[in-house]
Length: 282
Image (cartoon, rainbow, N blue to C red):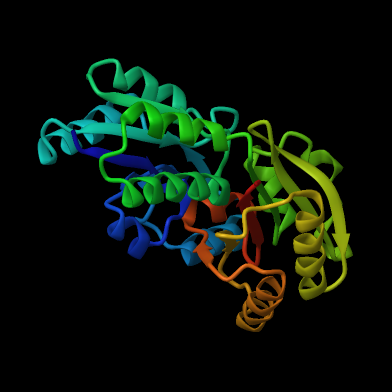
């Protein structure tokens, strides 16, 4: 029986990797100016212009139950007799898992994983699952599910927000009130802890030094599998800093680095110039 992996657009999986592994992606929503858009229908530039124009950030939401029903239906129509493993956005920060769970009850052969992760962490788990299938296309479903579930608590994700106002307005970070004003050159570090997004520390200074501190602290805190590292950036993040980061993580032993560009949903919460890092503990 063929296994199909699916997830939400908030993972920001690169199109090339999603295509390579045949990962099916359901779009989340962006709401602004009284209109609802699918992720991908509006650009990140439009998100930033909306903020500049209104001093507000767009709202985002999970796909609805009926959208999940249609999504799963399309997969089954295309891949008859397949099994779907839907690797879901954290249930603590989105209704995606709940809505997908309700929708899945209308079908047989759909299995859901609550990753308790968002964005970079979610991508790390999705691509881990895809690699397991690639290495062993005949892997038993129960074995695949066990392997995915085993890395959920080992998956770590942290990022520095490029704009504090986006984080505060977005409402996804539970303790965002502790953040200081962006004009103080402060960079809140937000980590995914047991599914929740929490501000854990503040960094100060220019972005290049902040990124280096974030990566250094991340490596100090977690002993990561060096097979794969995931780095996330949003529009406005400097190419020169990306180059510096590539060299820095290679020095630390990470040869295989996947860069994820934040799309409209994630940029609605993190703002421009953000940077994140994700990996799986040994």
